[in-house]
Length: 156
Image (tube, rainbow, N blue to C red; front, top):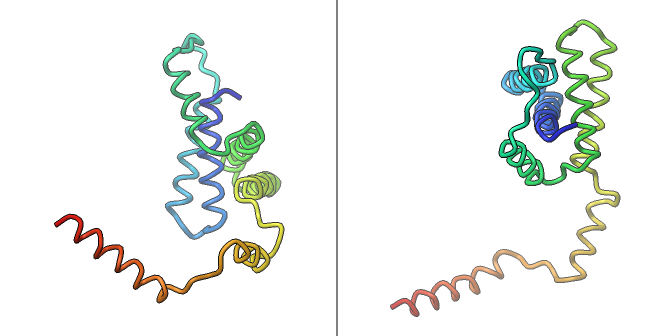
């Protein structure tokens, strides 16, 4: 998959994930439909235009892909799966198998893009407390106030 396809697939995957988490959100659904339409337009063969690649445009797309944290090859593949299955489902919305594949691909994307903690959060907090003890906000207020006053007097 080339860089532009990866960027379009990522948009579809993110929109699909947002809609699957809030199905009543019509804006999330609209973004999904728009992203899938852009994906379909990109992957549809264009017989009337020559297949040329503008070097500057390719470099910009490559830089944009690199700027997106977490878009490694596996993320690109998963995003492509979501885009492909979303397109199939939106073209035949009454087909239950298409929706099942779309849901599975979106779940795979969610599991990869937002991994869960392997250990309970309490244990993680205990490990963090080993580095430094928790401090209440009321204990910090006098120290921060003193720093603000010191900075204020230095400016005068």
